[in-house]
Length: 211
Image (cartoon, rainbow, N blue to C red; front, side, top):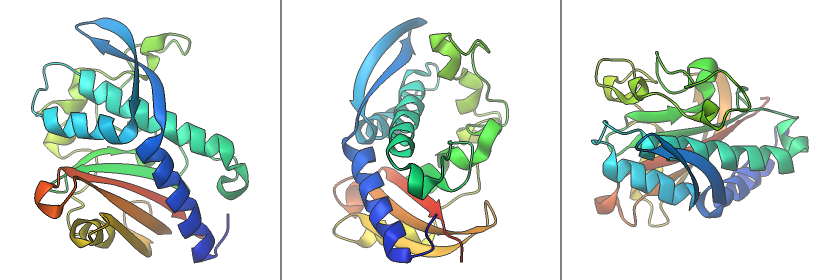
C-alpha cells in the first residue's frame, strides 16, 4: 500500500466513481421472497435514505448492503497491488454511509459486527443466497442498529463530510487520523444529493496510509 497521498487520492477517485456508477447484480428480499436486482450503489443509498423510516421491511437495507459489498469486492478484485489482497474485513479499504444528521448507517470497518450489535446473517450456510442478508434487528430502534446509534459514533463533524456538504462538486477529501480504527487514513466523501439543501447523507471511502 502506497504512502504517496497522490496515489491514494487517485485510487479513491477511481473507487468513488465505481461506487457511483457500478451496476450491482445482487439478491435481496421483498415480502420474504428472494429477488434479483440490478442497481447502482448511489441509487441504493438514495433509496434507503428516502425510505429509512420504514423499518418493518429490510428490503432497502438489504439492497444497500448488497450493493456496497458488491462494489467493494469489484474494486478489491481489480486493485490487488494497492489493496494488498484486502478483504472487506480488513481496514485498509473501507466504506461508510451516513444519514443527513451524521448517523452511521453502515461501516465496513466493524468486521463481524458491521451493521449493528445484534446483526447476523439470516443463515450460516455460505452457499445460501440469504447468507448476505441481515435480519431486522440491525435497523431496530432498541439500540441494536443504526436507529439506536449503535454502529459507530455520529460522524457529522468529520472534515471530509463537511467539505462534501459545502463544495459545489459534492466531494470532500481529507487525510487524517481515524479515531474509529486507530490509523491514518486518506478519505473521499460524496454528498448524496445535488446540493447542500437537498442533502440526504453521505458515502465515504477511505484507504489506510503507512505514514
